[in-house]
Amino acid sequence: MKKTLATLLLTVSSAACADINLYGPGGPHTALQDAASLYTQKTGVPVTVHFGPQAKWNEEARKKADILFGASEQSALAIIRDHQDRFSEKDIEPLYLRKSILLVKPGNPKNIRGIEDLTRPGTGIIVNDGGGTSNTSGTGVWEDIAGRKGNIETVAGIRKNIILFAPNSGTARKALETQAGADVWITWADWAASNPGTGEMVEIAPDYVIWRDMNIAVRQDADAETRQFAAWLRSDEAAPAFKKYGWVRQAAQ
Image (cartoon, rainbow, N blue to C red; front, top):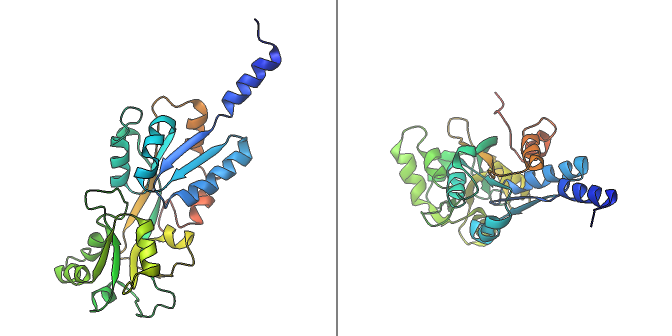
């Protein structure tokens, strides 16, 4: 039976508007959701951002992911290597950077003003670290910050005060809010922007601050619509959705 012109047009239209599915960790998801909403308004193409700890979405992503996103280079590499049948680590593309910050209890009761304050006895610090068993963008960030000036005493002083090596940012955020003795979380600017009620942001001085990127990888057999969306994420039109959460292309000088 021959298809009518209307049927053919409906088929083409449905294919053109097929959902684009992104999978990755919590953190970049807030900016990506805003960007996805803008893109859908602009084009009519539905874009869905799936996020959270990798174990939450990993199996579904094996079948449905069009784009994988990461919250750092090391975390992105780990994600892609778990999906090598459809994605290549050579296709990881950095899009935006965000800076490390200190997130303290509301009111900043310990009067934490910078990295040096983290070495004071009695300061309860939360850091992210996967410890080789979970994939988090914060792995090693506290050490990078503490070691920036080449002083082992800073590293040792901060390490003594760490009360939790959290496997992911969701766990770290909850601990800052509820765990006794938790005073400060070494985290990223986007987490503070996305969760304004969690605590107060304290800037890290430029000579200590660390920047890591968010990135994407498009599946190797992706269609033109998916690649068009990926390219749009790099555009000036998309950038404000990221800047709102602290993601920038270049740090202000």
